[in-house]
Length: 588
Image (tube, rainbow, N blue to C red; front, side, top):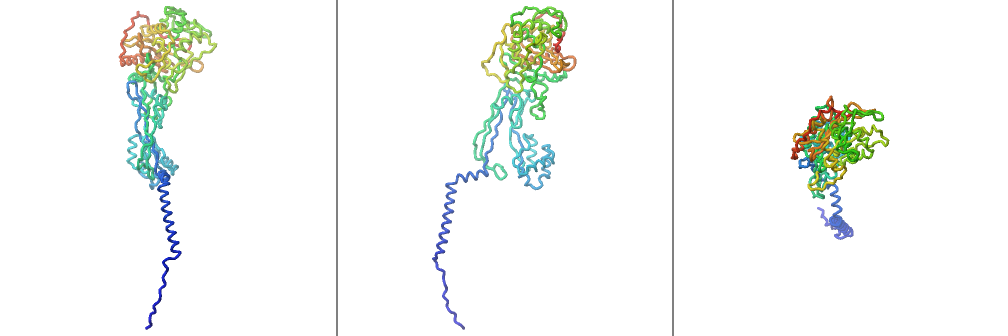
């Protein structure tokens, strides 16, 4: 056997230059990492936090709602209510396999009354989009049904929409808002800035699908809109709406309006128009329905302007309350046409002219006056300019006589042809007579108790009082407005029926009016009723508009506890049939 040699094993040196190099490299790397970590955690921590937050932190809006709109007694006319709107996270939606062919999606499309194929195409055209609006202000029951379908990518956002408790009754005054909660018509638009709130802001943390997982605090509190109190009395408004609608339907009319003004303050207590609409339903907001006829529609005022012609005569000093006018033989030829009464009334006093609605009488008064004397009253009561309500769409009327107008034109102006006014302008003119000659601009806002009400004297008090007394005769036996009488109260007013102008002259359509004051001894309300194009043979202001006036006035007087002033005792006078004027006709 061979002997095994003992071999000497070579060992690696424990300390070599490579060993030290490696140790140094590792230590440098370690200290570099420590330094970098310290830098990121201490020096650059804020920037890193911001970078992280930018991927998950969002600023979310806090909804605010518009202020209330209430009537003069605090009854709500418009309020904001929460409403669900639908958005689609389409990128997330399409992550679900065959989602557009699922029964849940078919039910979703049916609930929204959407064509399924069109909805699918709409989705595919936006396949990379997130948070896309699909439906605003969904019906609560529909929203609840869709939530139960539990479709990934279908999200809900809470918004506010307007609700109008009185619906059609105050629709033209209050107006309505759009889906963005901005006012589009009426008071909603006129006072949009005042009513609109200021949204707030808050920080939230969202996940990959932008769902809120954590709230990090409020950045700015939401500020709700200001409440607005109107001058409207919803009880009088309801009566005006009801009676006007009944008159329009029963007479087959095209439309109409009623305006009720507080004579002492200029506040609009009621303003109704027909046809109306439901502001809670967007599908009923058609242009022909949303027009507020009380401020937008212009018509020749007809015989309702005759008391103002008498005011011009008295103001000139050429006539007094005892003056008489010879209207014989009931017609006169001026320039190129006749001015006529229905029959020969003979000699009439000024109150007789108003009572019998004599075209001849007021025409002769106007022809005795200079143009300035005649027109001054029409200008001073506000014809030809906006009343200042501040509602969009208000017309300023048309009061522009030709510089070289004929005597016939001047005569026809005296009984309400040749110029145009709106119902609110006519109501303002009569409120001036009722206030003893003080002009106060109408307002839709309730005046504060004890507030000083600005006014301007435009008619001498004794003249205004005298003309109001003359207008009482219109509602007495033999007058043209007996159907405007209110039990227990004295009524001063004037009927009016004017033919509507068409190309080349006047057509066979009529506009009927009754404008009046009640109680006549101390007027509280100025009320104008206009009915546009009543059908049939009964198309006179005394038969169509006067009954509406009586019912609305009766309601307003009793609701506001106005004391009766009794009946005006007058000797019996034979009933006067409506007069007919040459220019367009004048049927009262």
